Amino acid sequence: MFRKNFSGDQGSAVLEFIAFVLVGQLLVFGWAISVAASLSDKVSLQLTAIQVARDMAHGSAADAPDGTTLKETSCLPNLVCLSLSRDRLTALAVAFR
Image (cartoon, rainbow, N blue to C red; front, side, top):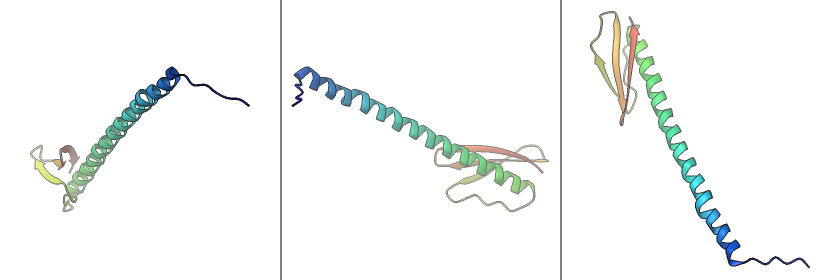
């Protein structure tokens, strides 16, 4: 029958591969997922700020969505300028009246 003989060096190579290559790839993948989630949160907040600014420009009473802070800033009379904040993220939006 066929029988494999492993030397100590081959076992070390397998262990080093698992420890450095696979764990390293998992760390990079986890970091990429974290960056993607952060970017998704920022884009979501920006789109919400744009929609709130449009609602305010059309005369609707715009409320800040749950968990966000809405602050109107001064700008030209025919514009609506606002800042929408959630946690440590801030989005700015401008809309024509």
